[in-house]
Every structure is written in C-alpha cells, then in structure tokens.
Image 1 (cartoon, rainbow, N blue to C red):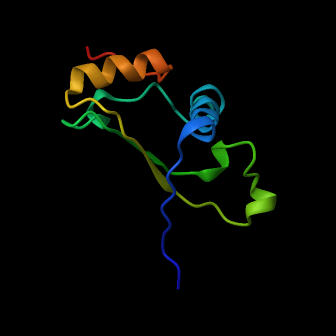
Image 2 (image 1 turned 135 degrees about the vertical axis):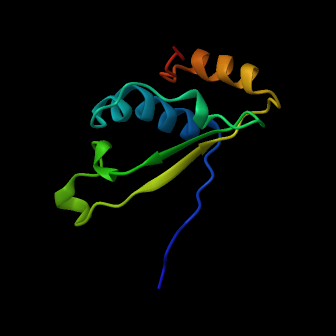
Length: 99
C-alpha cells in the first residue's frame, strides 16, 4: 500500500511549479490571507501544508477522483530566517506581515 511519495523539482520545472503555486493556486485556497512567517524554519526553508489538491487547476475533482493533501517544502541556500524571508518575498511568495 503506497502512503507517500517525494518529488524534487529543479530548474525550469521548479520555477514553473512555483509560478503556478504563487500566482494561481494559493489565491484559490479557501480563507487564504498569506503565508505565516512561522512556516519558515531556522535553516531558511519554507514548508506549506496543502489540505486540498484541487487548488491546482490541473487537478480537477473529476480527473483525480478524491481530494488528497500534501506538503511542499521550498529549500533555500540561506541559513538565516530573515534572509530566507527576503528571498521568498522577492520570488513572489505572499508572506503575511506580523502585527
């Protein structure tokens, strides 16, 4: 019984996926108000949990058959949380500001 899979994207495919995630999929998420700074760990990596796979237009409920959740981790080369946050903002991630 398969319970999980890991995929590593690099180069053009990675940038295409990030572009679709940031510009199309995250805004389709229910009650989305930005990514919390808490999702960036001390090593500068961003981790997102996606509860519904149908936020991606390619994954319509008719084609998939069932809704599944998954986790996305964006690994940066920085070792500091602040530098990683700045890099992710420059890439276009909608990181919410702390109040």
